[in-house]
Amino acid sequence: MAVSYALRPIGMALLACMLGAGLHVAVAAADLEVEIADAERRLAELLERFTEKHPDVRIAQRKLDELLARRPQAAADEAGLRGTYQAEAAAQAAAEASAAPAPAAATSAAARRAVSVRRAAALRCDGGSTASAANRLCGRAEQDWTARASAPGVFYTNNFDYPSREAYLGGAHSYVYADTADGLPKLDLERHLTLSGAGASRHNWYAAEGPNEAGPSWNLSFAGPGAKEVPHKATRFYMQFALYADDEWARFTYREGGIKLLMLLDPSSAPFAPGEVVIARHGGGAWLSGFRVTKMAAGFQLTWRTPWIVRGDDSIYTFYDAGPVERDGETDATDIDLFEQRWGPRRRNLDPTDPDYRDAPRFEGGNWYTVEVHVDVRGGASVLKIWFAEYGAPPVLLTGYMDSGLRENTHTYRGAFLINRAENTTSWVDEDTFVLFDEVIVSDAPIPFPGGYELPWPGSETPQGWPPAGASPR
Image (cartoon, rainbow, N blue to C red; front, side, top):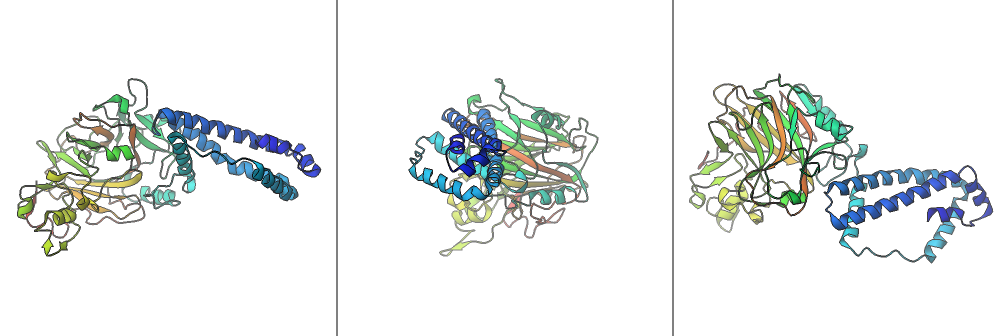
């Protein structure tokens, strides 16, 4: 359409201009519009067959994003060449627009999804990062990352700013399950949903795989990105990372186990060694949980002796306390609903739809989150703390133990696994899904959360009132 527009009789002066030095600009703009239309059609065709997470859809989406990013400059070039004839061209364009039939409304689900994806692609932060509801630092993510990554005590940083998938895989100490048997990428370099850098570590699940434990894992050495050896050992450190939760991943529930997200150990050793720390998403709902390995695996839980309404039950957030709750003469010590509002999810009622868990921290689809873990295995008492928040929000000290039972050994601590693995699952997702990891920092000192928020109760500081009356670490 743009070619025919450029060649219509819109006045001799303007036509002469367009036929001169500016003709190639108009033709280039027209060619761009043709490419955009082709890319939109290709994306819509793929969305009729696949979900937005399918690799072919993602490739087509990225191509469309690149073309759309060129449109403002093409329009500016063409407008500059029109010069004093802009009014004539605008009047002609308006006349033609009024005579043209209105575009047909999108009727298929795929067409509506294609429009939605294009609109989301247009919401970008400064520097090209995609905006999200959780990314409160939109426009300042680069500066915030630089401040955190360059702070005293930091000895490992990675925001996955790699030029290719090959470089991304090469930046790991090691990795497992990088591809499916059919050659689809289970580990991939994400270019669309990113924070400070140009990439993120994408860990895919495919619905067609069916239930499996072949969770993709990108493993790092504390010696630095790309290091294949593990010479750097740390027994007291802080590790922070950002995680993006896809809708389907956050919705998925099963009762057989949890979804491993981070494993702290020696990446050159076999998993499930003494001292290992695992941070996970609970199988029963999108709550942060995990366990540590001492003589056996032990989860992060508080066992309640009182009040009587939950005697013998466990709450999975060991440090969380939303504060006293009262209603209609009842309190959190006499009413089970009020108890859950104060102390969060409990083992005997892992119902993600329970309204009493509405304000309890959890992963929600379409948002970035920040997680930080502190491990200190020096001396007789060891500390294990995990903080959690939406990206750009103040951290909450959520779970862990003041005396975790962890002790120093040959496996503590030389690196970590960034992983997306469902343990013991016999159910599976209904559509392709994924999580993303980004902005990994490991430091000898506490790491502020994005936005400059300091950690509450860092190091060996015992939170006020911990453990709560009537409860003890399990």
